[in-house]
Image (cartoon, rainbow, N blue to C red):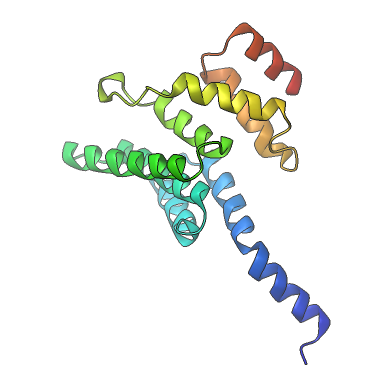
Length: 169
């Protein structure tokens, strides 16, 4: 028979592993400032992206960010398209997931307009703002604050959305 503490730890690992990995993706995403950081995010998200659509979106975001570090134009285009495809697949799997929409929004806002990846910005802003207003990510206040800060800084918000997010800060 397994000792109770060992059993509890193994259960936490089995059922909380993906959540811990997803939290690691969240942290890595906001701390990505170099190509090495992008590789770290790709590694973390790659471990759970088959089971977790949000991790697939993190992997897509990391690939799109990797395009910034590529010198070869073909590689830039390839990384960006692979990343975009993964993000769009995650959106298809969970269309109302605000975290996935947030990741897509972040990539769309920083993608050059000539690439044409900006058609869902308003839709994503609306969904994210509505989710935040309903209490999305209340259990992860640091992540929630980072999202609100990002939205207030970079997203094109209506005055109503801006005021609501200011109140949620």
